[in-house]
Amino acid sequence: MVRALRERLIAALAAIVGAVILVTGGSDAARATSATLVAAHAPPPVPPTPKVAATRVGARVRITYSFAVWPRNLDRRPVLLLTSVKASEPRYSPYMKRHRISSQKGTLWQPLGLGSAPFKLFAAAYSRLGRSSPTVSTRVTNG
Image 1 (cartoon, rainbow, N blue to C red):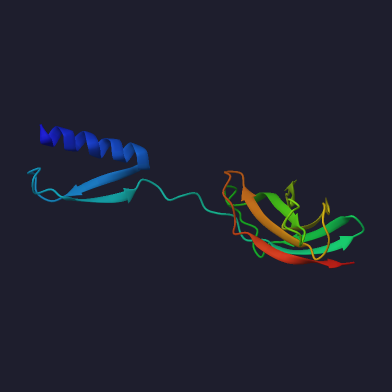
Image 2: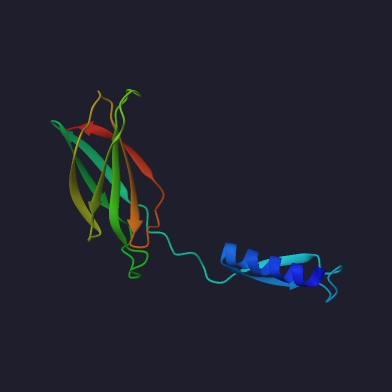
């Protein structure tokens, strides 16, 4: 009875974590106390971190981006750049925008949003699988 319950618990845990569970120890349920999780497959790779620069042009922001590497692996290649311009005043929400990208470098435009200077730009790249690169930030300069 204990052994059947233990096997059902291991199967349920494996289904939850999406991994294979190897149970080590003796065949006796009382002695088999340690379990090791082995990943069934590696997690999807993340896209590279973008390098960004932002310049204020009137009520808009010119964003230039580039990637040090442009992955051949399509699951790792960036397809979307999420940008957010935040004002210095905390009462205003950041202005966020999604930009579809298809090249290693480029220029994007975005409204500045509400608030006053200094402004800060945050950006992260996303792959087609929805994986995110680390978020980067830079100060918006006057152009």
